[in-house]
Length: 67
Image 1: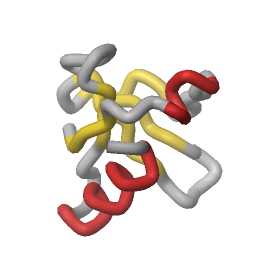
Image 2: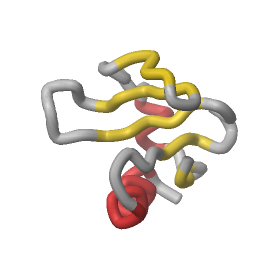
Image 3: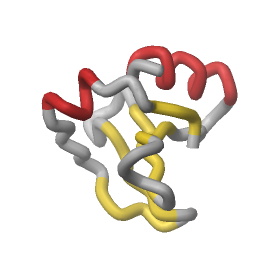
């Protein structure tokens, strides 16, 4: 699915539910926020980054899913 669809489903699924690309990240999840922290990147329960900068290919990809 597109990133926007995955984000909408993650929001409906509950707090801290993340998204990921199925072809790229098996263990990582991205949690979009409306805060100054932007998108949080987790590996398991460990926060790796609070500033994910997607590439154009990430934004147009259609392989996003709930993490």
